[in-house]
Image (cartoon, rainbow, N blue to C red; front, side):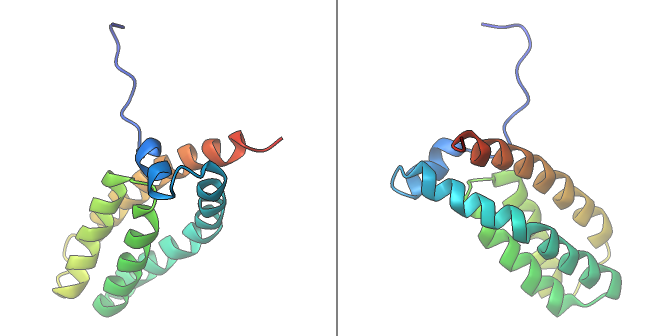
Length: 122
């Protein structure tokens, strides 16, 4: 066993691949769509937090949570769920910090998805 553990992966690719019946190409295609749409989805959440719009926060965080769940990215799903609940309860006190957590976790997931989706190309 190596002395230093690798940082925990942001996603569970094996689980994500089994979700699509083992079709890596399909998962890579879904990953590509997610990578294209994700910045816009994050922007919607950022704007909702900035505007104090709890309904929009709930909807946008819910949409992102569903998308990122396809890749078994548990940490990102959890962060999106927290924001969704804050929106539902109209309690945005800690939303800025929660959004930063989400952004960080999504960034890590995107790096791994990009690597995965480029693997199959060529």
